[in-house]
Length: 79
Image (tube, rainbow, N blue to C red; front, side):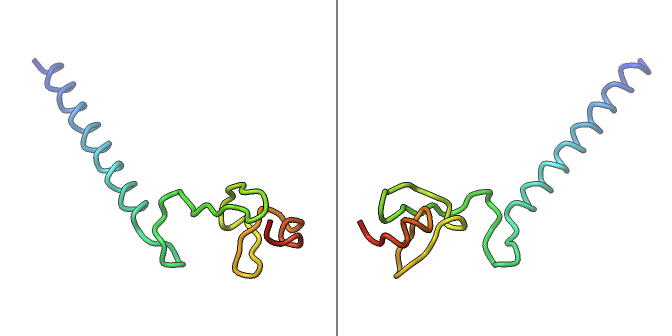
């Protein structure tokens, strides 16, 4: 009887610890970062105005209100 109680309690402790960790991860992911945006692990994608390639906005080159995949395409201008 003692062994069964031990395993049941151990399972309960593991379950509670897992739930606590899971809730903590969800709260951390939904909290906004320093820029005020939520950390979703995703970033807006923008199409290159010359070739149409979708690139993350942080890696894209901006020029004349348009987005480009490389500095060369930015210099070429709209297609």
